[in-house]
Length: 274
Ligand SMILES: O=C(O)c1cc(=O)[nH]c(=O)n1[C@@H]1O[C@H](COP(=O)(O)O)[C@@H](O)[C@H]1O
Image (cartoon, rainbow, N blue to C red; front, side, top):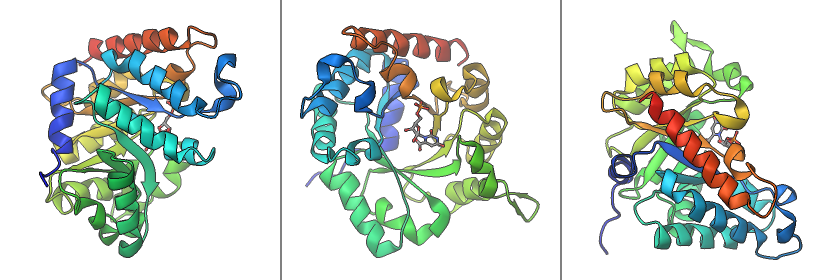
């Protein structure tokens, strides 16, 4: 079997080819779908496929959030959706947002779920249980592992800001990721757009490592401050995610066109500051 292409390399190529740092988040909530989707058993797939096809010209990655599928017993639709992205939009990586974290033997199963069942290119993981809980994902050659570092939510400070030897815990996570955990070169970190100062600090610690940055759009993160803080010297290095502000930009039959417009505007705004 040929090895998987490198996630980090594919992502870097996508940034440069598409000229976009936008990651379109796929958090499907059927109660917010336009009326035409009511009572359709495949509504989640159909809605997300329409969003993917409409926004792909403005995106460099997609990020489905697993809970939005699992809560509706729609894991099969998630499989179909990721297969659709690979088939119709090759070269745009799919990040499965699952925020997993467990002992090694269980993590092996989560890794198989993300990479073999769903065929994601990368998965989000929680570092709270330490490196042996992350290693099983790295055993999948070429697959990306995106570690929570400084999350976008207000409660993220409860633990991530605890003082560890004179600096906040999230900085220790960034340093471990950059210096000890990244032998495979396929790690990335999550840093919320709601905390641009911390984005800048993390960028200083991790060099060119990719950052997944959620929190613009519905959570109110500042695009200009985010981009200025997180860009690499080459003006790339960030998967800037927006979910609800794109998915639900329109409520009617033109929802996909409205999503495309929102994606285009977001891409263009990001590009003003690269
Ligand atoms: O790992 C994530 O993607 C993530 C980390 C984080 O710190 N904050 C955060 O909002 N997310 C996810 O990013 C998405 C943000 O969605 P919107 O606020 O609608 O753009 C959701 O799927 C969250 O689960």
